[in-house]
Amino acid sequence: MLRKIMKYEWTATARVLLPVYAILMLITLIGRIESAAGVFHSKDKLASILSQISFSVYVLLIMAAGFITLIYLLIRFYKSMFTDEGYLTFTLPVKPATLLNGKVLVAFCWMILDMVLVCLSIFILAVSPKTFAELQKGMLEISGELAKVGLSISELVIWVVIFVIVGAFSCILAITASLSLGQLSNKHKIAMSVVSYIGMSILTQVVSTYILSMSSFNSFLENIEKTGFSLPAFHQFMYFSLFVSILFTVMYYLITYFIISKKLNLE
Amino acid sequence: MNPILECRDLHKRYGLKEALCGINLQIEAGHITGLLGPNGSGKTTLIKMANNLLTPSSGEILINGKKPGTESKQIVSYLPERTYLASWMKVHDIIRYFTDFYKDFDPTCAYEMLRNLQIDPDDKLKTMSKGTREKVQLILVMSRHAMLYILDEPIAGVDPAARDYILKTILSNYNENAAILISTHLISDIESILDHVIFLQNGTVKLQATVDEIRENEGRSVDSLFREVFRC
Image (cartoon, rainbow over the protein chains, first blue to last red):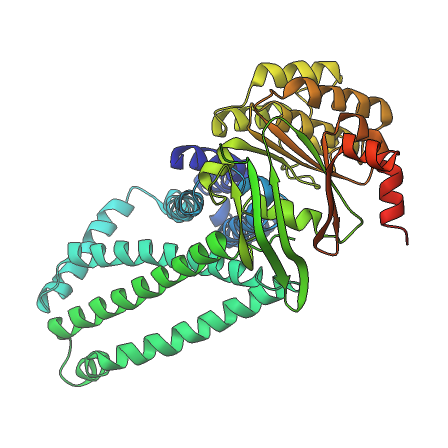
């Protein structure tokens, strides 16, 4: 059933999101052709204005792609679960957990796809024959610096990947949890969702600051200032941050699950 | 054998307001039951609880002896009183969706009914009139070989000619092991197909009888009895 839920969730979201990404990639290609034609370095006034405009449009578009992805996933979740469409969604012979997992996994894929495409797009625009040599040189420099404190570049990459994955789930589930909390209200569902989201963000901040203060986070920062980077302190800090993020993500999941399985309140 | 739908001292409160106050009833297979009552009497609340869209405040509701859940959703075909289909979908897509999720859904049957009501499966829901959308939903719901059909206001928005076709469809599509529960205000239109009636008022069962009993004991139609019982 998870496969079926994901299949339909994918079709429903692709209908809006794929065109957005297609436009992003199209603009990227146009920009690439423009820059290959030397428009950006042209002395002609009109060409330079045009190139500035197209660059601004491009930056806006990259930001918009991420924004639209998030907003559309939010609307889709709300509509399919808590409006009239919820009457069908919740009378399918599917467990609430399967329903939630399917939707969250598809949303996760879209967020990752968005990040990958934005990186790809920037890369396409920026790439030149010299890029690879420069990239290699930069990587060597960074890994040299990291090696001095005993950190390998692959370890750093792994940390980034882990935090991107956990961060994406956390972002999606914070939204599903606040929408679910909001629909408990009989009259002001959307306002309550917003209030829940803000409330949860504050709570998350306060609790994670508290937990991190128990770790050697503060001494880690002090050490960097006084004696420089310390690897054990860095590790402890990363493990603690990861632990806190996962803790909150799981909490958001459980809130959503509990509400859609036990406290459904469709109008 | 378990009754297909059973309520035992079922209560539902919204805040301080009590929508259902101690409903006890049983619906056996092989009957068509009318759930009748004025607006706000608790019909839709009861139906939503049978479909696991609301949870009881106390008491219990059982479908085929079990609490509403994934299993009951496999055997209950539910028509809500609102449009629950995504408007960007085509009728084709929706039929595929139902075929994928409900084992008892019969697409051949659905396409035949669409043809009879002259609805193009390539049309999007968005472009249809409200009445046509309701017809599509009813076709989907009646194309399942379910054990219990729960129809909340199934004919309110459609024209009288389609109404006749739909009632005929309801009668011819369900087998004798299944049960149908219809909630409606339009009693005179569906009276001819009902076996049982349940009158709900302010969250309590006011009357529960067979249509034959009403005709024999009261000597009049369900419609006129309803008008008297619920006189304003």
